[in-house]
Image 1 (spheres, helix red, strand yellow):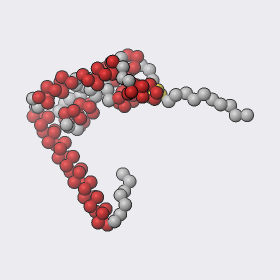
Image 2: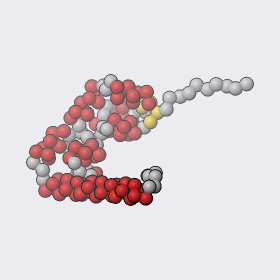
Image 3: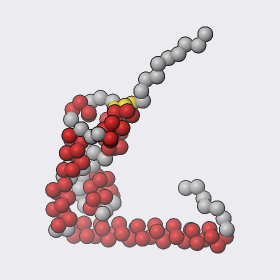
Length: 138
């Protein structure tokens, strides 16, 4: 006789949920930081965000990867510039409006890396087409 066990919903740590939502965990409400989040709860937050989530997404503070994307630099570029704290939308806007030397330099570096990656990708595609090989799984 097989016993059917009720399935418990899959949960994730608050940090994982915050990463999936693109928000800075320390800026979230205490109840979010201190309890696991189910997949259903995460989907509900994505579909119908609570007011605190809407505010965080609009004004920040933002996690490093979001700050880097908004500034057009890499995460490593932020570290090189000494930016270790989360930034708000106003702080990001101030940097964009009057970019310091480090931001200009890091944007140039990031653009060069992106161009090189695109060149390599294109060269691989040309080589693949020339040799009639299927693409490698990467």
